[in-house]
Length: 135
Image 1 (tube, rainbow, N blue to C red):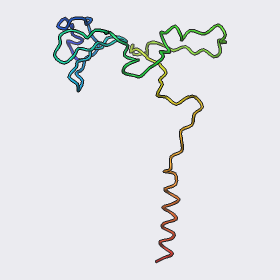
Image 2: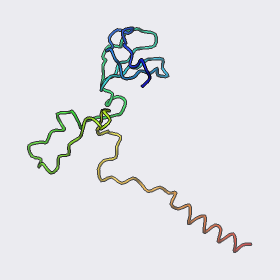
Image 3: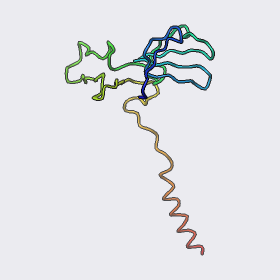
Image 4: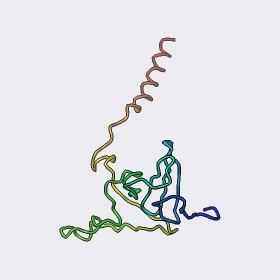
């Protein structure tokens, strides 16, 4: 991180101090990040939009269910200890680790449909063989 950062965010109302990151999106809104939450400040406003902070994982990473730091990550009474995996919440370098599930992921056991690209090499070889016979 550059010297002098993170900077205090006292310029905007409704934002915490010592932000982790900030950016301006293509719609003109500014987004401010701290920890697991973010705030949206519309185009030329100087105050965070109502309804914020919101979870970064849910809105930016499409996480529908957090696997660490959530009550659901605790073992159910019917689960055996063998089926439970511990999810660390911080990496060795101090950065926070986020693990989640997403509705966009394939369901377990679902296989991706095979790509028709595997047909190209045999077809190419066949076309070369036919071409050489015709010449």
